[in-house]
Image 1 (cartoon, rainbow, N blue to C red):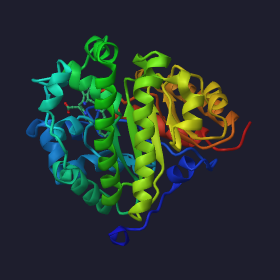
Image 2 (image 1 turned 45 degrees about the vertical axis):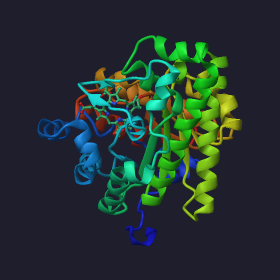
Image 3 (image 1 turned 135 degrees about the horizontal axis):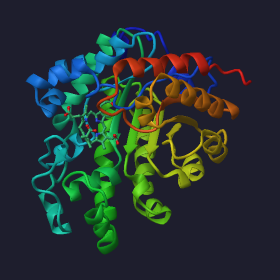
Image 4 (image 1 turned 90 degrees about the vertical axis):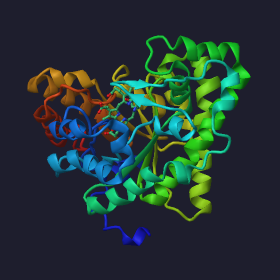
Length: 363
Ligand SMILES: Cc1c2[nH]c(c1CCC(=O)O)Cc1[nH]c(c(CCC(=O)O)c1C)Cc1[nH]c(c(CCC(=O)O)c1C)Cc1[nH]c(c(C)c1CCC(=O)O)C2
């Protein structure tokens, strides 16, 4: 199937992900297909969120929106979907109104029996695979396509909280009151993540990113006890399965948001090629922590995009200097997803500044 895809014309992000110091930093932004784009909001007027996710033609169209708008400026696309398609595939109902809402969350470990026993990922998430194949063709080789999933801890937290939460009190109650059941559930989610990520590569994804958006809510000990084993389970098994099935060995990105204390350990042991970082850590310090073991991705505070052109330029310049001080690959990005309300032209300016200031030579 792979030879039916158009040849890739921009491999900057693939080279940076492999640790190469590229002539300039490749750049994309998390949530680049989303509510800050008028063309996305227009589509949302006539289609529900998960309807778009489940309709490959619509998901393809939205994935391409930022690629078209910022053609020549953005170096990767990310398939339009959501991390919560995994809880859905496991048998849970998830609504988006406007944030995620689970009408029937997991309350005690007895509720685990309500989850689907053996998830047939190829059937349940076929729509994502079809969207990936269609998008890969429609991209015409302009930039690589990133596939993704939520990390088990972040998904576990949503499945128990039933939506967003400031404290994660319910999810943490599980960790501390039912540690063995929690670990088992985390690995069960991880197994679904493995099938899902392998399926995305089979469908045409050229990189994979795992979003552990709530990693930073855990103490270092709890992160290493509960989240970390499931992240290693994913990297180990995805790589093994890709090799066994003669699929491309694509770079894997881990974004364990806020778990900056663990960067050095993750770089050595977690089995990912790239670690994403948020803006709470300085790039120089992050590079020192990871050495030359991995590439880094990040990390401008997304709210700088509200600060006007001068603020954006100054922050990008500083960020570029920081990341270029150390050796190793760097993928420029925000430190978390772009938020609704950003003016699309300000994001364009962010991309332009990255192009201008991120060349590899050290000053
Ligand atoms: C935690 C999380 C979710 N989803 C995701 C995460 C991890 C990244 C992060 O931490 O931000 C990941 C995600 N969600 C979406 C993508 C698409 C690809 C992309 O452009 O990056 C990706 C990669 C689309 C989306 N997912 C969602 C929207 C907006 C929904 C709408 O159209 O109303 C989009 C474009 C909805 C969503 N989905 C989720 C939340 C909390 C929300 C509501 C708040 C918000 O919009 O940020 C769960």
